[in-house]
Image (cartoon, rainbow, N blue to C red; front, top):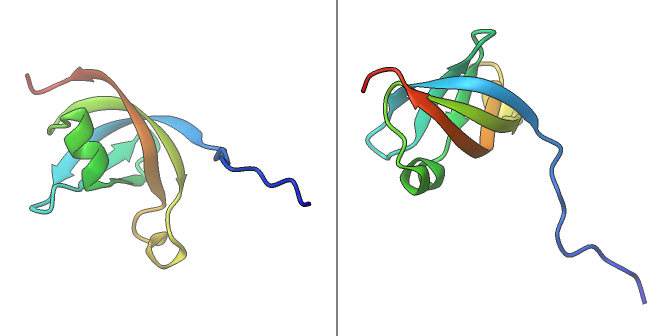
Length: 86
């Protein structure tokens, strides 16, 4: 019998990001301190109650290959730090 790991962990890159845009579909785009674009999916936006100006620690992985030229990163987990607009 082959021993398989049921839950894989992703090696993420933690980075400080600020939410700049939330789309009509509730996904969001943020920017990190180096100026790279970061994608946050609608599930995370809704679950975390994200809004414009939120400063987060994003745990990111490289974005899908066909999207990396424009948006190099995507978050798989976020933690709120503060909001600049409220």
